[in-house]
Image (cartoon, rainbow, N blue to C red; front, top):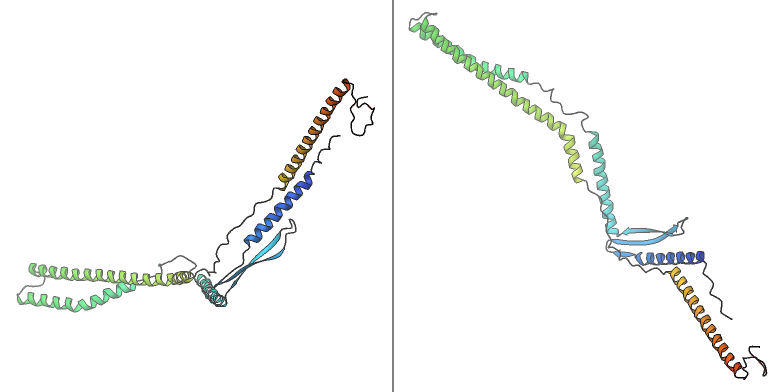
Length: 281
């Protein structure tokens, strides 16, 4: 009688076994890579804090602890940066709420005062020049209104007018310089909050934390449980088929031998037969 074939593996059980094997391998690899570290700056360690309610996977937490000296430095640096951050907030609140506007600068009085002061200085010279002109014309016996007098008076007036024009240009320059001065002062005053903010921003920096060396990643290959199960099943099927084939070959050989004995008049006994019995009836 031929042997029965191996029972086919249950695919659901094989899949479940493969999934469990994958989970075990993943958990093993995770443990390999959760290496606690300690150096002069502090320590870094892992701990399980719970389990994911959906997958059942463990949830881990990485904790970093600084050395006392570094923790004190970290706290001081954090406090300083917090102070700068607060100051930045105050500086932002003091920024101008509108664009720079120099229209309020008025230097008209500066020009007038400059011109008046120059004219006051030149007035005695004008008077002296006029008196000199009158004296010179009188000494020469030239009456007022004469041609020579009028020529000299014209030169006097041109010289006086040139001096007055020069005073006007000087007054304009004084007014322009005063405008530039007031403009610069007003602009500096406008920019002061921005300058203060820029300096604070320049002094602000991120609070650093110690860096631990990277953990070498280790990984164990997953076990192909499904393939191994089916390989074993196929091997059992092949072995069963070979066993059945060998059995059938043996039975066929015995049958041929029995036929040969029967034709020669001799009896052939199979196991369990009594003498006088014919194996083939």
